[in-house]
Image (cartoon, rainbow, N blue to C red; front, side, top):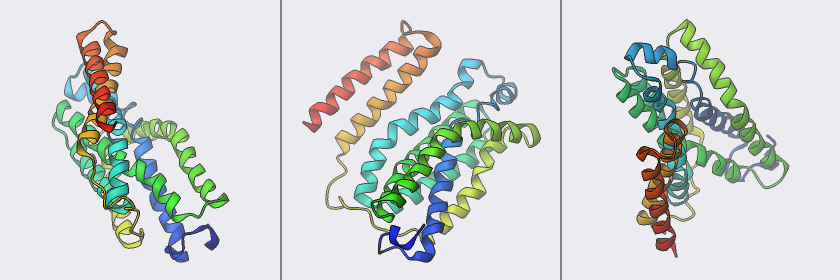
Length: 256
C-alpha cells in the first residue's frame, strides 16, 4: 500500500504489516465457519453424538457471530477498534484451545459459541480499521475488496483445511491451529496496530438496546436453524421465532 493511502497517524513502515494482521484475523474468522464441517464425522464418532446434536458445533459459531456483530460494532465505536479487535483475538484463541481439549460435545459447542463472540469482535472491527487507516479512494477500496474476497473464498478454504488437518493430525487440530496464529497476531497487534477509533467514547453503550437486538438476533437464527432440521411446526422452532419478533419489536420501541 502506498504512503498516500494511509492515514497520517499510521507510519509507512507499519501499514503493510497492519494489513496482513487484520487479514489474518479475518481469514481465521471466515474459515472457522466451515473448517469443522469435514471433521464432524470424526467428532460424532469420538463423542457418540447424533447428527442433529453435532450440527450445533457449526451452528453455535454462526449464531454468536451474527448475534454479536451489531453490539461489537457499537463497542468498537465507543471504546476503540484496537481494544475490541485485540480482545476478540484473545477470546477467539482461548476458545480455540478449550475447543481443542474439549472432553465432551457440550464443552466443544460452548467453546465454538465463545469463538463466535471473538470472531464477531474482530470481523466488524476489521472493516472499521481499514476504513480508518486507508484514505478514501482506490487504496481503501482495494483493501476492503480483499476482505470481501476472503469472505467469499474462505468458506471453501476452510473445508479444504479442515479435511487436511482431520486426515493427518486429527479433528482437534481444526481448533488448535488457531492458537499459535492468534498468539502471534495479538502480540504484533499490540505493538503495531494504532489505537483510536473510539469516536463515540463519550456516549453510553446503550445496554438495553444492545441486549435486545443481540438476543433477538440470536433467537431468530436459533429458530431458523432448528426449523431447517425439525420444521417450523416444532416448538424448538416457532417459540424462538415468536420470542425473536417480540424482542426485536422491543428494540425498535426502545430506540424510538
